[in-house]
Image (tube, rainbow, N blue to C red; front, side, top):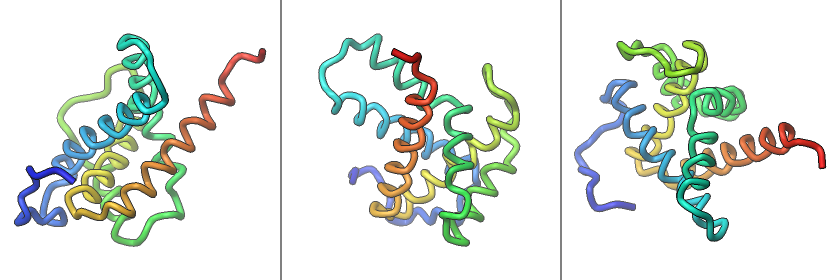
Length: 142
């Protein structure tokens, strides 16, 4: 994918918070790429749409949608991320949502650093489906 990945990095040896740090960036880039790919829009609208998709409450919803769909290893990574104590709290979301979002980000970071592109794509597609379904159900009736 990118030429910056050190092939000596062993994701299973990294802390859950380091995995979440990487996963946060990977997920936000995937969201931005998706939004830009939908067609022309102004940057302010793109930013608002991205924020709706990357906020902790949305990622927590994705975390829950993944239940029963992960391998044992993936479950363990997500659980470690959920249980990690970051030293700072969420901005505007509950601590529980923040913890679940960290679990999701840890999983994304793990898959990215493991170079498991197929599984990462499957998780990102599921995330997009969950978000689009949620946005549809919350859309005002027309």
